[in-house]
Image (tube, rainbow, N blue to C red; front, side, top):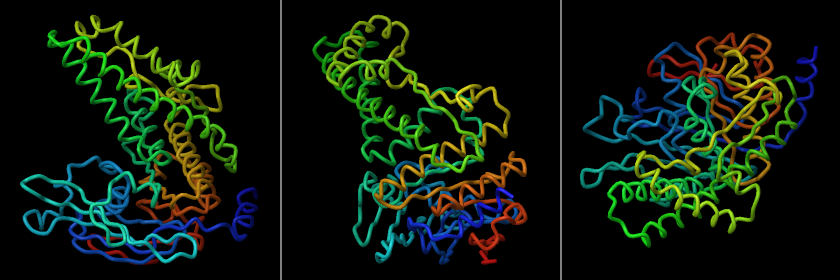
Amino acid sequence: MAHEALRQTNTHSQEDHGGISRVFLQHFRSWEHVSFACDTTPVILTGPNGAGKTNILEALSLLAPGQGLRSAKLSHITSHAHVSHTPWSVSVHVREGGLAPMVLGTSLEMRDGKERRVIQLDGRHGVPQSELPQVLGVVWLTPAMDRLFMDAAASRRRFLDRLVAMFAPHHASLVAKYEYCVRERLRLLKDGRSSPQWLDALEEKAAQAAVAIAAARLSLVERLNSAKELALGFLPRPYLTLEGDVEDLVRAHPALRAEEDFQKMLAASRVLDASSGRTQCGAHKSDLVVTYEGRAPAASCSTGEQKALLLSLMMAAVRLRARTREGVPLLLLDEVIAHLDEGRRVALLEEISHLNIQTWMTGTHPCAFASMKGRMQHFQLEKGTLTPL
């Protein structure tokens, strides 16, 4: 009865946050050429294994900074039949409100024997990746992420940093700058012949980047904890905390003081870092801690509970993104129905409908999405074909 009441509520007019209205893929993995139109409501892609469902989601994920949901080498994406011919390309029409659609695309370019990904936006070629979140705020969940709460802290940091990048376009550049400074400092320490002045300069740059990274992470964690209250409440509400020495400094002091204190920590650990071959403290050691309703650690929850927690967290991020009114939020969920019982599956689909944000979902069996008939677009995929249902 509760789900039926929600269906009635969700039929009321809601704000249209926009979405993708047309997709073009060329020489992209299993898709030689495919072009199809859709509207900005949620999209379901069903079909047997190997039909190309995840390949479409991967193509859309490459409209965000980084290497997409598979983190694949760019040249490996090209369709096997065209490895030595035309490289792959992805292009979409992005509609926002009543504005004319924007044309956003990305493709592989080979130059001087080197591969790179180039981005086009409304006829502009070579658009920097930092501009992508201003057009599309893309987040995704794949089966490979199901062990996020069980894996090492590095996986959770990367996950959190992808979410932060939706709200702070230069966050990824800051992380890259910090990691470069830490690597270069460690190389000089191992070499044993570097001047203190050069180490001071590297540690100052590392401290500035680390404090900015920690501040952005902490800000998003706080906002995610608040955004969960906007959910319907059928999925569990994870409580997030961020552990790390730089985060402790940022919580306790203004930015300049935190930078100075962290720089001193780096200077004090030079001998230990040189002997161990590792940097003992910093933003690369932080960990995102998630608990179920603020009680049980996520790592101790069942597989289904962990999946539901992760879904709840992802949708909190998308809700936040929608409220910024900067670009179009886009949620990609690959095989999310697996490991969810019927109650949580219905709850997830109702939450997605309530979000009123374009969400792309894949699944093997159409019947798993039966409760959303008439509220979502459904495409059936067979190898090389895509048919609206």
